[in-house]
Image (cartoon, rainbow, N blue to C red; front, side, top):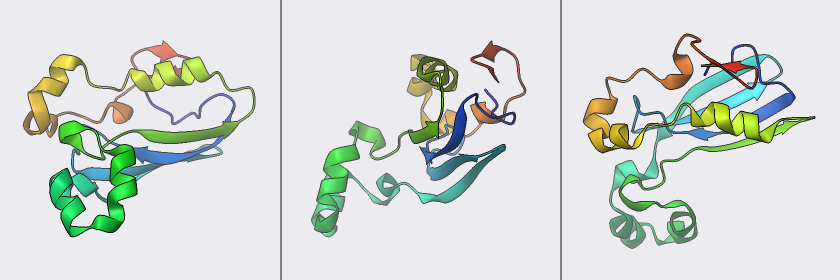
Length: 133
């Protein structure tokens, strides 16, 4: 999927994304008008240690960790908010779902992922919801 032509109905979007080829970088994703940006906002909290170690050394993070932590990948996730008019939620979700790793790709782990090209940077090869992948 590429979003260089915008997403129909979306005026603004912002959030955090986890891309396989950059497994330790928390990327900030945003759309404003016709501009789409992804920027490195630093490492995920999980890069600093295991859940219990972080809770012991950083007890003030308990609420955050309890809310977002998922198994071995910690706080790595996709969390995006869309603002717009007449947006097709199903089409947007389907287009972003095309970017997710398959179960087999997830099993390969971070060592293999470093060699992956970020799905959102691939040339267009299919159409979904007015977006291309």
